[in-house]
Image (cartoon, rainbow, N blue to C red; front, side):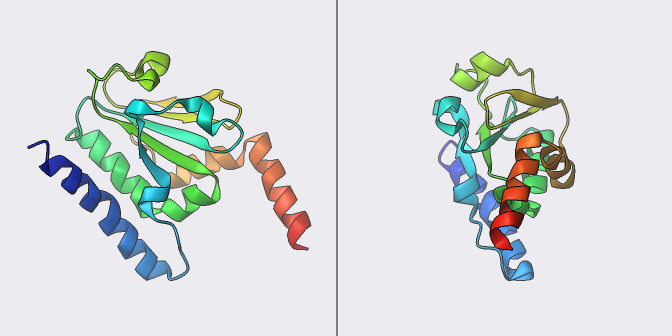
Length: 153
């Protein structure tokens, strides 16, 4: 059973991405560049580089976790554009550093900004559109947008 789960997750993560890339045509985002198994991750490695979006569940079979993964996979390029890295932890017994710091109970979605501040906690799945709107309102993201405009002109 444990050998089948990685295969199932690989299919779950890559098939929607391939479909999205085929429909958009211009997206170069690969799920392996955005998704990271979070049980052995130190959040310090993302400071000032990425915005971690942490998805917790008590099982990879949790319907809320599955729904959240579907929502995230549907618009990976929008997340990658905003320097989001998605960390997943579906093993409550792992004792991971993420679980020690964030104390999830069941399903939980956490957005951490580039300075390491916990910005948002949600007990239910969120659509990428809601996530990106929240990120786009951040002062640092506004500065990134302004810097890109100034550089592109």
